[in-house]
Image (tube, rainbow, N blue to C red; front, side):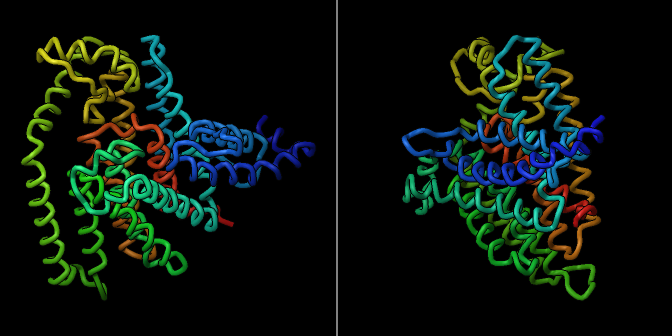
Length: 407
């Protein structure tokens, strides 16, 4: 039936019109994500969620009618994302909860498939790469415009960041930086990749996120060690190894120094996790509902009950705990499947990506950064940044596959 629809001659004008429309919406989304909204004349604007939903609708119609460049294909990571989305929807339906966070997540999953379709050709893959880089640059420039003082690298300035919570921003930039560094040896993209990587490192630095600092350092060390391999030798040079070890030790000391003033916050994280797990024990099958707003319904009273004081923070600082608290057992299984698929993607990147070992390591390192930071945060409760995670995974998956259908 689908092939019949794709062969209808009367739909040919639609097939020609949809790809440029989708490309335009994708470009507009790159502007809206740093700003929050895309401004229009007369004071009107579109939110990034509205743009993303329209992009997904255009992409889905293009897939159905067979528009060139908009074919959605089976994807290991995409299948796991759909399973996680289904578990989240089930939790909201069972609890009659708020669907706002779920709608944003659904749009991000749809954008994953659109970005993956765009990256099916070599030209499209480069465009998606530059899309990620320009969004990263845009976010940093917006933060500098809002408060130039953040460049002084004072820890107190992290509270002035406007795009999202500083830990979440650090999370994002630490994930993207290895992707850009791995592209440095690709001729035509060398200059742009260097620019994107530099802005991403600045983005991590201004957040003063300890986990992001440490994760990025380890990713950079891994990439540097890969770059140090020359002439087919199995081991990198002693100088590169020592430099990498020194960088890791130095960052560990810096993180320890920052942690000295955040002891109470760290202890509080353990209490937050305990509170969330107690909610899961009470709602094991469907959880309390996907999203921070659904958790807000239950969390404050339970925290007061357990610890005798109020706390208004509505995520558990841990992906696995948030998955089971929000979505129950089904959510835990779906989240575990997503992690398994991401690990498989990292293994394939490590094993298969050509032409350089540096790029292979950088792709695997980016996924490793995401999985490591899931231990201290919940990525899918941060609306606009979820789009960047899913687009990055779509690009990595296409890069690992080598996009065999490229024209």
